[in-house]
Image (cartoon, rainbow, N blue to C red; front, side):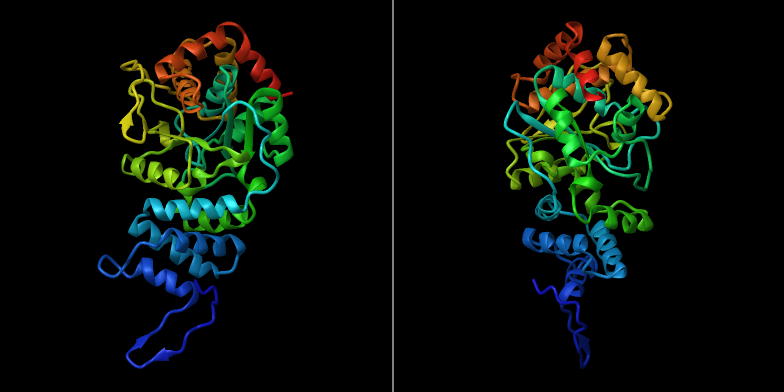
Length: 347
């Protein structure tokens, strides 16, 4: 793709488009005239966005046009690949299976965020978990796992080296996208100004931080399930599970947990009528995380965290089904491994 942004000369009766304007034209011409980008085109366009090689007007036009058109698995794979190309720092050393987990980067507002709790339980059961998020992001500007870690006494914005150290001592790493990916933070400001979600809100959840090749990805709308799974397949994921989680997070709803891998919906125990409610304040989530890891919590929050952890243990390949993962996770809480993992995380 021609990366030049030089304006093309007008011709009689029509205008020709080159550079990034051609990309905008491809996706933004309307229902009849638009087309989907190839994976290579989506990769190139995203790389230009991250490098700051397009104007804010062009970047905004592209993201809105893509939002209206709707993204394909190829486009998501190309965007995620470009984001991953910008990762800084080394991958994690070889060890137990590494699972990258993320829900909506704009966080949760109506209930405590329990992604970190699920990660601690899964790590105690033998997996290694990467939880990734970034700075406050619209449209929700909700609570993020980084804030929960800070409320527990850890760093809210760890550098990559700190993330690797967390993983080494506890089996859990929190990765901050602004520290781990070149260009992500500058682009976030523009996305916040636009306000609406864009394909980047999905693609950033598909990055294999620290070298992860296994994924648990949260989403809100069921139409995104096959797009996410298709994109992860194109990216060569060794395991991919989508979760229709609370507020688009990677935390399952205990009353009706929905988790899917390519070709089938996973069977998870349900607790009808069980809802996770409460203040979205990070301090509340931190207290719940500690109570869950120590075995002091026995309500809906514990159920959600255990089921979410079981999905992660399954994605790591450590058990034949998520139901078997539930047993592994419960045992890890009962014998103190979960509490030890949490203590190691926030040293």
